[in-house]
Length: 361
DNA sequence: TAATCAGCGAGACGGGATAG
DNA sequence: CTATCCCGTCTCGCTGATTA
Image 1: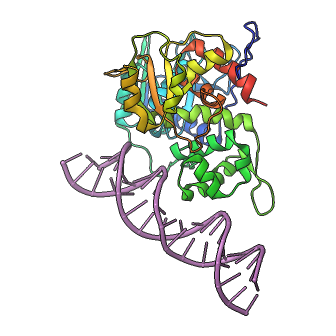
Image 2: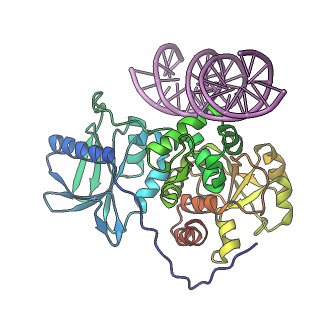
Image 3: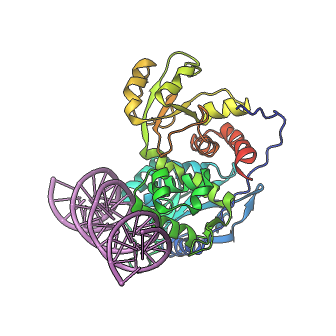
């Protein structure tokens, strides 16, 4: 079952459906206010959800002396997010502009990591790191204001929530199955289901479900995009390790399925679109199979910092409950998410194509 | 390093439906 | 009416992460 897509297919850039919600607006306003109180230069918000080079960004900010512009990415609860993914998202903003991460609160360890990578940030507590040519602002040690607590996020996109949403998206019939059925298919505890579904409804991703009414997606595409955005959180948890393989194309081997292994990311995309040469092999398998798998394919462990990007084999534990697979490839949704999580700009185009061809219906 | 906390799995609980 | 089953909710306690 291999679909070949023409090379000259027009790429439709996914309009980033990322409306700034009320909480994010509050965070942005508070952060700017704090900045202006403390720094000697003035910062103003030119536009919420402004458009730059055809892409919508959370906000466009301007520094008063000089009129330098900054593209802002606003995040609530940033301390609980995967920092790599956040940085990656910032890097994905239109090129040629300075960027800044705006958050509710950036705690000290997080601040260190952001500074090390030279990522500008400001938070609602008043902490700032802004390093631009000619401008340097650094404010640290500010504590978050207790009364100013921005609403806690619900359970829909925790690691467990992500598993449930994945199950719902890939098997829509689960929308109206019993909680037990959903729990089993999603591979999570029964007790987690209720709150996740409730939160999805509160966030307007699901409707119905009371009594006799059928539960349904409000906007499936929006939920897909949201899931993909949050997926790195789960991805990090199921990461089984990074490795090097010396033999090229070693994965082109029918016996991989013997290990219950599924090819994902670039490998899956390469097989469905014929559009790219995989550089990194993303593979999902049962954790129990890991050691045999490594030995049989002579994979060597990668050491050091950037194990999530540099080596050429990435292993992940299968997180879903259902073990029957029609193909040796991961589900399109997961392929899409892995392509985006790879951080490779060229993969983004292919990712969009996978999404437009197979996911948005 | 110690204390605290969120997340979540396991399983008990009890309300409602259904069959006998 | 009562026994039984089904199913969402509740509670407890473990784990790993975060904060002091």
